[in-house]
Amino acid sequence: MLQVDFGNIGSQRIGPEQGVEWARELEAAAAKLKSARDSLWNRASDAAAMLGWVRLPDDAEAAREIVAFSAAQDWVSDVLVLGIGGSALGAKALDAALGGGGARLHFVDNVEPEPLAALFERLDPRTTLVNVISKSGTTAETMAAFLLALAWLRKHLGEGWQKHALVTTDPERGVLRPFAREHGLASFAVPADVGGRFSVFSAVGLLPLALAGVDVDGLLAGARQANQTARAGVAQNTPAQTALAQYLAWRKGQRISVLMPYSSRLALLPAWFVQLHAESLGKAYDRSGSRVHVGPTPLAAVGATDQHSQVQLFREGPYDKLVVFVRLREAGRDLTLPAEEGLRALDYLFGKSLFQLLSAEAAATAHALAEARRANYTLFLDRLDAFHLGWLLQHLMWQTAFLGELFNVNAFDQPGVELGKRYTYALMGHPQFRELARQLQEAGVRP
Ligand code: PA5
Image 1 (cartoon, rainbow, N blue to C red):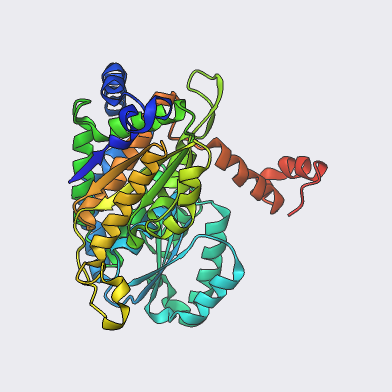
Image 2 (image 1 turned 90 degrees about the horizontal axis):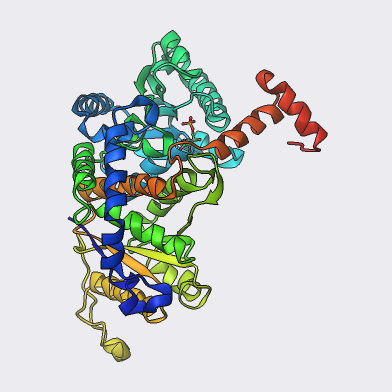
């Protein structure tokens, strides 16, 4: 199950200035949320609407191909995953949470030379698979890493290098697709109507995760569950409700949206969420073309670690945050704290479990924030497994889509990111961007 406790956004708990009359707000927004839901589901089959991610959990054929391909790669000890942004963050977060049963994944999502050089020294090319992932098939960071990885494979493996390169890209666009065809490389497609940050349940995320031994079918079953709740009426529609809570918080001036899982295994989840919310909702114009400059600022935190860091700010700093906790109801493996005669001052811990302590920390922080009139709510997962993480990630994608409707912005484009990419091409001498390069030179911009 994925359940939400909204208690700490209520005005009875945190006062009328910061809190909301949740039941009343939900009722008032019911018609709007219902029409947002209907509009999203109606657009889901329209390729131009970029809602293809909604259908990914039902694509059993694609999942079968991915699982079969990865099962055949029993020679692979390490996978070099080359991708950036939406082409890396989902698999990175889920590998950190669930990986460990298969090949080791190494994510290259930056162009800093030292770490990549170190990887090339450390990895054995004979048992390494390079999975280059780029929806557009043009992103400079990923292409640069791929050029280096190809040279590394060719140098060490000679003619046998093709078996070690795997391409995930758009069915048609970009330079990778023809390259894969020319060299007979294994390749998978990112559906044209699935954007990068919504692509974790396509081959973008599932392929490296399957190679890492993650239960791909479990992830998709969980994502289907999120789809089911996103179809439900407003009273049962968890993503519509969390979107509303986020939207109301924004309107109250709580313009920073913190995601704080109480789990080190989920430490990379907020980075994925930050990209999802920031790129989808940070928009200059609404859908009618009016200048709006909206978008909550997403912020990453991890419990209990950040209780000794950011929580001071969350509790006593400006009233500008909504904190969302993610908690597990079950520990999985747990550890009992042993008694120690020489440390009697700690006897309040003796015999308790480590998970009990973690849960107490989460409950204590939520209460301490509420007591200081800081809005927060908690997402509870029964346990940390593929099913529940599939549910959680698809839930957060739905939340983002609903927020796009509430803010009336296109949550599925990223003009600000694209502009940065074009400037980079120009500065690096890409022949299609000569005019832009001239303008940048005039403006005094240098690499
Ligand atoms: O969400 C997005 O669209 C972006 O973050 C992209 O994933 C990122 O820019 C990488 O693009 P590509 O997969 O085309 O290389």
